[in-house]
Image (tube, rainbow, N blue to C red):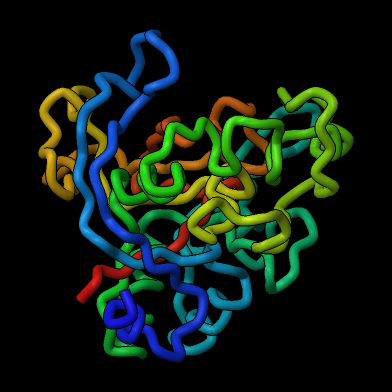
Length: 277
């Protein structure tokens, strides 16, 4: 492990994840869903961002490149307009979300394509091989190395930024975790809550995180056992982890959501991964 960690000597905010095999998918219920069938997956060692990519980090990319996100170039970002209603607002984007954020908050209104452009820039800047985590890597890490944890914090009461009483104060018709107050109505600065057993923060809640894979309806039924990377192509890209404004069940470690690669919303962000070599 010492040798593996030396790759990122002096590199902040990347966590070494020791690989292994686990039962991927909904091991908690017998209800048919896109989270079935449960299947064995084996993951090689890799690195994963300790935190979601922040507003401040994305700002450096924009400053260096002049990049304009798809929200800025097109018709805005899906945002809340009150009373549990949402629509795409033309002026909303990563730097103007419609609610207060600091540079330490996770960047949102980011499409899969925007995340990809950021990673290309970071690789050029640092001479590395960052990428989005695969769906299997994401779930393995969220479950603290494949443990049967329903949420990244475990199987106990909430310990992250999910739709809660604070969010309901701001958006009255949200479906929330009744009786839980995480103290943030919107996104929370990364690292505001305790990490999971691997030392990774906010894998349940805060923002939905884009992963590498395309979505395919029956992919779990024929997924490769070793290091699956999803279908070669598809219509939709996958997101994981739920968000500050979404129903509690989306924060489960096995929950899956997908959208087109150009989709963006005030609940969508990302974190980066890096292979061992």
